[in-house]
Image (cartoon, rainbow, N blue to C red; front, top):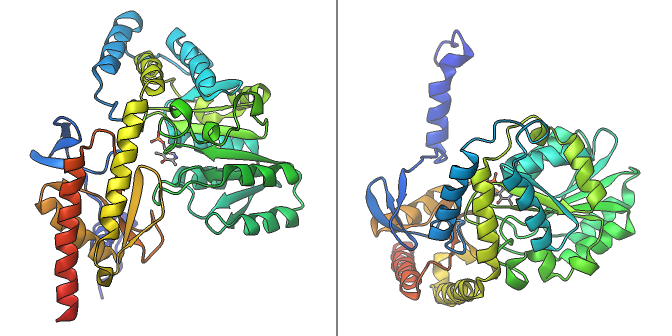
Length: 406
Ligand SMILES: *Cc1c(COP(=O)(O)O)cnc(C)c1O
């Protein structure tokens, strides 16, 4: 045994080594765009299946042009909090456009999705209130819940009977249900009308995080709430719809939309909004252009749908003996569960050796024993791109089953 370290800071290298031994050490790669779904990764050309740029808009010249023009008009920085001097004309215009796009009364635009959820949840509920959270919710919903100091009821993933029981048993007057709409590591879509019906029955507010549905799902990409028919005249004041703008929208930031009084409340009470510098106006201008492109991108959504179908039917043909398990999902997020961290990393490495970049997602991002490849598809992928991935997985699976039998 080592002698106890003099300072806890001396223990950091050993703790890092522990992370390495558990195959949990994360590494950043330096990337540059290389056309379509291709990237230069640490200088090497790779075909990437790990971007959330689902519509291939992040590199769109019209967005770059909008940002360039806005830089000339507004400069680069916003200069302050939106409540002081940072609420640029570009940001104000974007909020109107976001609300109109998702067909809800009012929207509030944030610099990041993480800050949105960690800020708005504590603005809505606190000590003595009750919060109900799906077990597979995104980390920032979990962190927002913890920050709020509300009593947290975590229900099994998508188990609405368990949620109903927890709501019925709660004596709290203020109840908030929070859920991903499309789950970020599994790709499945929650039953939004059923969730909302429960919230209505128990006088709860519903916060839906549509980071992976916005731009992709619903008519003209207006998101999963629009797909469920719960926007416009059918909008409920019980739903706060949150979505991020760094994924299908191809830029950065996030917004929350809903009932005008609730949005005003969030504007008054959200600390991550009040005490932070507003997003640069050039991003808001790029986002205004992005909303136009998203609305007109039925061709891109169709292309994405074709790639999803192609990948799923190809993966269904993998040998069962390998023990991999494709989770049910109709979205751009396709999770191929491998099992152990080590096995998932081995598949990732063998794909990498063939020039294919598919991330292995490990605990704590996903539950222990469900390490997986998270295959993110984009309209920028061609049928040939998806074929390359399928063939490589096929070869790796064949190798695994041979090893298992000998
Ligand atoms: C990416 C993501 C976020 C965080 O958004 P950022 O803008 O990247 O901070 C929040 N919720 C979900 C479900 C996400 O996938």
